Amino acid sequence: MTTIHIGSDVAEAIKHKRPLVALETAVLTCGLPRAPWNTSHGPCPADIDDSAALHLATCNAIAKAVRDAGAVPAVCGVLDGQPWIGLDDDQCASLAEAPPAKAAADSIAMHIARGSSAGTTVGGTLQLIQAAAKDGIHIRWFATGGIGGVHRNWQDRPDVSSDLLLLSRVPCAVVCAGAKSILDTHATAEALQTLGVPLLGLGCGTLPAFLSPGGPDAPAIEDASDDVASILHSHWALGGGGVVLAQDPPASTAMDLNSATALAEETEHAVHATGPLRTPALLEDMAQRSNGASLRANIALLLHNASTASRLAQHGESTPKAC
Image (cartoon, rainbow, N blue to C red; front, top):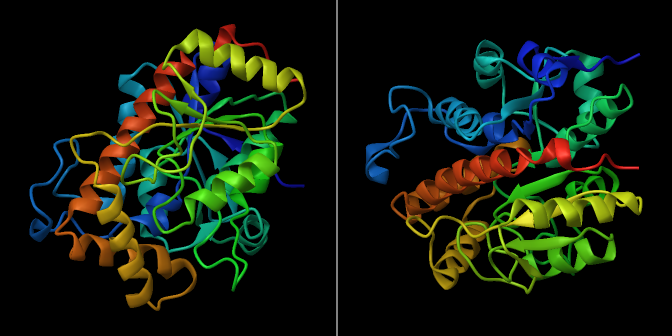
């Protein structure tokens, strides 16, 4: 029997009914460079410790953004074969030193069975949230950078992230900046609709293109907590699963849509790494080609999404539980 371990801070939050925001860790193990901030990318973002490895410094900054906005971060991951909701700082540091690996819906069981460590993807995190719900632990808010989705050129090589299927099953609101920039955002939006996953634009009328605003249309809602809570309640009361709440990346670091699209296409053709090494290789190539603009935008939207999810989670206790 697999036991989901609950960190002490998360356990205290559950006991005292404090708002929780789940955080994935694929961004820690596979999403960002493992060296300190590279000065060739321009000035280091103010929220990032430039003396620490960027992947861990960013993970710590995301958790801090959740705390600063009033919620408790529930960092999810698999450490030495043990699935956790609520990794502490020392455990995150240990995970940051592990070989790069992702725990997605199709691979998380393998990491648990083999005693290995891996950062959970959006789908892997949702799977842990779903398992915890069986023990009466309900986590309704999740912050990430961008969701997985339908990859470019899917007509020739079908490649669809398992994130989408888990989103359709698990009643949790995912705050993001749309689908990752290496994906086909229009096909991803269509797939979400097919799976019955509501896609809502927080203060915008599109599914953002991760590093830039703009993309396929999405119903826009004002960033008002009561409105969001009402929509979530209605969806969950009908037996629905996840909801995607997408917001534009911060304007101060966002890239132009055409420039970001061209950058992603150039990178796709240039990078040949496969497996868990592909995402960091793609991101590093994009950072080099954009003189750090893509990396700065990525970090800014991660922190922005964490703050927004935390603020919205303040109303979590007044939001009725899913049926």
